[in-house]
Length: 53
Figure 1 (cartoon, helix red, strand yellow):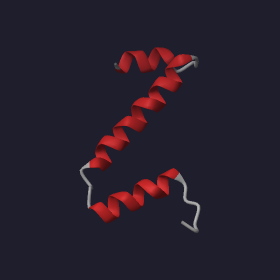
Figure 2 (spheres, rainbow, N blue to C red; figure 1 turned 180 degrees about the horizontal axis):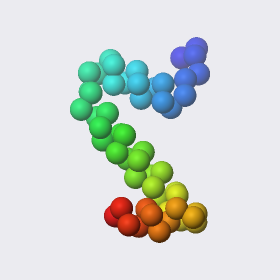
Figure 3 (spheres, one colour; figure 1 turned 45 degrees about the horizontal axis):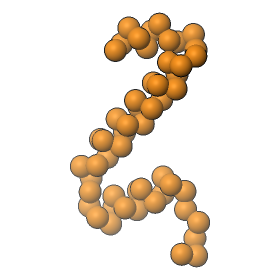
């Protein structure tokens, strides 16, 4: 507990130690959806994002 790791580092260590590589695509898709939601709220890209969905 001496090192302060970022959340990304903690997740990476969890995936390596537990051999839970099946979680990686789920985490990536959650991040992509989160970014799309943030961009769709108020930006010039909104019409293009809505066309994708």
